Length: 121
Image: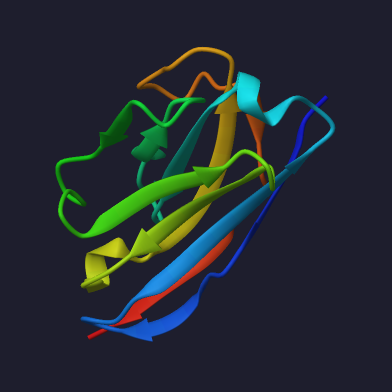
């Protein structure tokens, strides 16, 4: 059983930056494809970014390409999401998720509780 705990969310002005972290415990972190999702009020949860276990492969939603960067540190069992040039439409709860295989949908095995990101205009 893998536990995921996100941190780093907050309130930021448009154009600002945040760095989200997701610490994993209870499993072999390097086995998992790690992803960040987000869910805004009254919207479906969507994939924001993902990274393979060996960092060779990353995925990004078109809406965040060039602004967000996903990374991981397997020694620390932590995955990060650097959010730059934030826009009000980036406001959402951001979730960390883990799965043994890469997926583009929400059918991930493990989920964190989420961290709120609010971008003011």
